[in-house]
Each structure stands twice: as C-alpha cells, then as structure tokens.
Length: 165
Image (cartoon, rainbow, N blue to C red; front, side, top):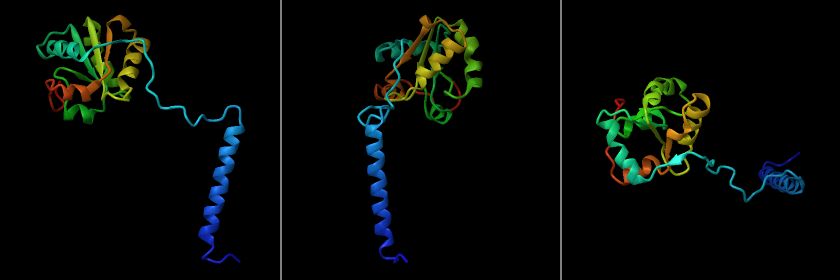
C-alpha cells in the first residue's frame, strides 16, 4: 500500500519521467516539433499595405460620405463598438453575413482598406483573402493597414464609438 505522504512525490516523479520520455521521443522522431520555431507567426501576404499617413488621409473619405474608399474593421464587434475609424464597416473575421452586407459598397469602391487590432493580429489578412478568393474582389484595390487599430489610436486618428459606421 502506498502511503499518503509519498503519493505526491511519486506523482511528481512519474510526471518528470513522462516529460523526459516525450522530449526524447520528439527529438528522435524525424518529424518532431522544433522547439525554437515560431508556430504562431503572422502569415505572409501579397496584398498592398498603407502607411499611417496614407491611412489617416484616406480615412476622411468615408467620413465625408464619399464612397471611393471603403474601410473594413476586421475586429470583433465588441471592439468595433468601443471605437473604430468613422465610416468603417464592421466585418468580423468569422461573420460572413457582415461581409456580405458590405459587398455592395465594396463593389462600388475604388479602394478597400482593411484593418484589425495590429501587432500579431491576422484578421485583416484573412478578411482580405475572403474578399479576393471567395467573393471575387479585384486584389489590386485591396489594401491592408498592418499597424492596425493600436497605431490608429497612437497617432490620434478620429474615432467613432458605437455600432454606427
């Protein structure tokens, strides 16, 4: 019978042995996981990008009621409602109905600018891919603002709160 005092020590020992065996098996396996590789790196894309200055300049168009530039905010709806570029459409990454509602404006636009949170956020890239590869939007009019919402706030761009574009 195992004493209650030695049980935690035996459990820790068993866990350590299991961990060492799993590391050894991974190291010996030809398709083992590389411990130094970043498996969560932001995906590369071939879409055009905008600088902060261009993003600020173009952001005045939808706010003024001009439809030549359409802004798409690819963040979650709750983040959009806390603050977004005035005139931007809320098109969360996993909400095809929201993207569908913006398609008519997108088809009439000369330029589509997509942003998300920035940093390692990849929602703008996936939204751009959906536009081009699933909805047939011309890739030459799709632009991504990679620095994203974090940069927009940092440079003190205009912000609209709530659900209204």
